[in-house]
Image: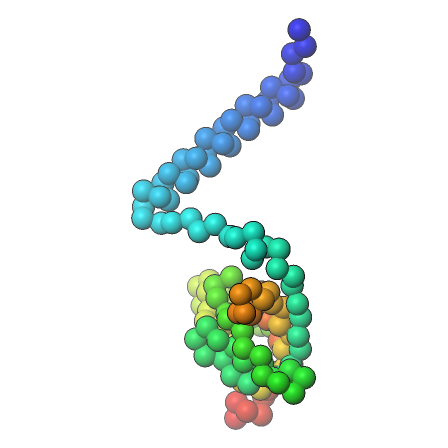
Length: 137
């Protein structure tokens, strides 16, 4: 009979311990009234696309970008990452989260990475390339 070596036994024990913690966390979140929303396979397999342009408007969860002579509208949610000079510092100073409207402004030049699913374009990442400083005056 072939028994696993000491690392195999420890690895197996660690796996069981980890599985127990994951099950406990899932049970706690379900009992606390939180739901775990699975990500659909279609959302994960949709190709990531990029576009570059000028921010026309940003309000709530909608970003409109002028790119290539046409307006493109993106859905912005809590999973959208914003990359901009000073954004990390501003977010830390605000206590961990800021609305996207505090980081992205009309007139900014931006690159938007997005996934298109069922006709809706969801922004994955917004990178501010150049700030519109004149419009803010």
